Amino acid sequence: MSLILAIDQGTTNTKALLVDREGQPIHRASSRLRLLHPEPDFVEQDPLAILRSVDHVIADCLAFGKRIAAIGISNQRETVLAWDRKTGEPIGNAITWQCRRATAICDRLRLDGHEPLLRERTGLGIDPLFSAAKLAWLLDRTPGLRDRAHAGEICFGTVDSWLLYHLTGGTHHVCDHSNAARTQLLNLHTSIWDPDLLAIFGIPIAALPTLHASTGRFADCTLPGLAGIPILAALGDSHAALAGHGSTAPGTIKATYGTGSSLMTLTSGLTSNPASQLSQTIAWSTACCTNYALEGNINMTGSAIQWLGEFLALANPVEDAVALAASVPDSGGVHFIPAMSGLGAPHWDSAARGTIAGLTRTSTRAHLARAAVDCIAFQVRDVFDAMQHESGIALPALHADGGATRNDALMQFQAGILGRPVHRSTTEDLSALGAARLAGLALGWWPSLESLSHATTTFTPQMSGSEREARYSAWQHAVQQARA
Image 1 (tube, one colour):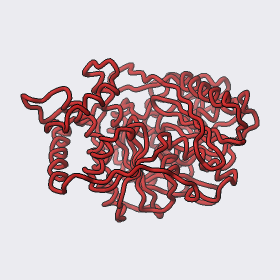
Image 2 (cartoon, helix red, strand yellow; image 1 turned 135 degrees about the vertical axis):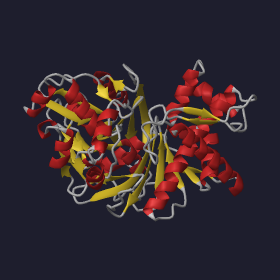
Image 3 (cartoon, rainbow, N blue to C red; image 1 turned 90 degrees about the vertical axis):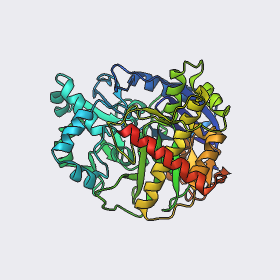
Image 4 (cartoon, rainbow, N blue to C red; image 1 turned 120 degrees about the vertical axis):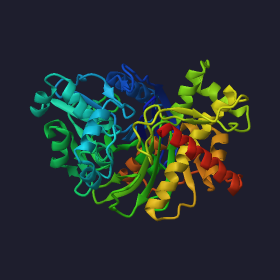
């Protein structure tokens, strides 16, 4: 039996799936990762720890004892690294997508009037989330790095580039279009690194990876046990999850519930909306075409529960906070706005800060824990409403995936606060599955993503319209308090 190995390198875990000829996962491996916080608003990861976690899940999958036909990759996005091109040694830690260290650079770019050009060419507003400002910070703060980057001695890359460099023994420095689209250096209209954007951020093109379609032969792996196996797909995790849901037509919207969350829907092409609250991006590309999407990013969803559990000094922060939340029927009017690193879509407010609102004399830890779970669903509705408005397409349901979707109470509340059915994927690791299915498409194992089965569990709204809007109005008021 031949299988596809899919590696999903995420923020807090690296996971891997083995996927069979029917496009179904038959084995799973996982390895946890730590986040580092050297200063307030700084979030980093050890690049070598990332590679060790990848090697760990690969070894687990190889021990399963089946032939690997191809490799697919999905990865956390916007996280950036720099490393020595010759030795592969990292230049410091990876700067993760959650890190806000580039806020001052973004403020300066905004004051200098660059936002209209950036939004028109990249589909992205100015925010420390995106990779280019982090690279600009790194170049400003690391002695000698700029000269070495201009000389071609340094590689800059997103996590897909770092993994591809590792998997190919340092022979390939490559980035797929979906990850490149999140750097704010790629021109969406031409699908190339844009000279004007490079000049704005001061990024030397000599340090950037070669661009590649999301599917097709990137290179052959050189690692022991996988030598000669082709790498046939690589793309950002949110994009891969969209592919995993199996729809390639506009009008389907998915939400991936992870450390943060991403809502994404395919579009028929690029649009022009200078006042957009959302991002335009490349969903994935092939040798013959590019698929575009609208996206809204939420900074803290699963990590909001993690933070609250740690704040309450619970022994097992996530599990105990979820159990505590389940002990009460609702939050008792308490709202938790997890804006510890600002608010993402549709607010894009870096100055917002975490807020607990609506406390009364009878509020308990359980109400606060319930508010932390509910805030995930409220934030998803914020983006869902903006996406429906901007796309001009009726969005009749939400497709959901990711670790937090295992919480039935959250999924039921999500359906209620949206007033739409929520179709939860029965495959938790949909990013890895999407990467595997795109690799299988490149292998010719199946004719299309739609031809593959995808099982879901459906949650239908049980909340009345008046209750829904009263709750959502109270949430919006609490958000305004966090922004004030």
